[in-house]
Length: 116
Image 1 (cartoon, rainbow, N blue to C red):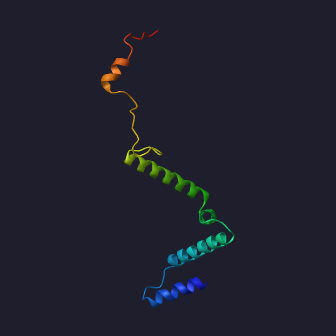
Image 2 (cartoon, rainbow, N blue to C red; image 1 turned 180 degrees about the vertical axis):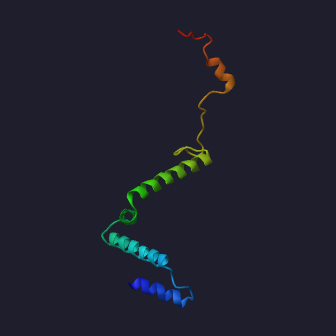
Image 3 (cartoon, rainbow, N blue to C red; image 1 turned 180 degrees about the horizontal axis):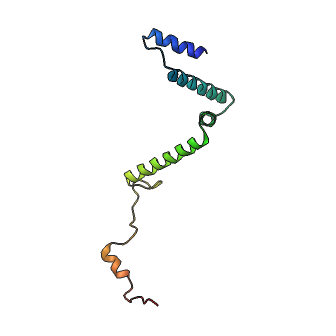
C-alpha cells in the first residue's frame, strides 16, 4: 500500500487530479510487475529471464502467442518493405525466380502434349 499512498501524494502535490480507479489498478499492476522482476533478479536470473518470469506470471499464454505471431508478421513486413531476406548481407546479389520473358520461351518444349 505504500506505493498507492505515494501515488496519491504525488498527485496532490503536483496539482493533478485524483487518479481514477483504472489508473490506480494500472499503478498497482506496475508495482506487482516490478516486485516480480526484482525477486527474479535477486534470485540470480538475467534481466531477460526476469522479464520472461514477469510475462509468464501476468500475461496469459494465448495473449503471448498472439503477440509473438504479430511481432513475426511485422518483422516479415519490415523485411519485405526493405526488399531483403533475413540474413542476406547488404551487398548480396538478388536472383530472379524465373528467367525473363524473352528467355523463358526458349526453354519451353516445342512439341504439343496430347490429351489421352
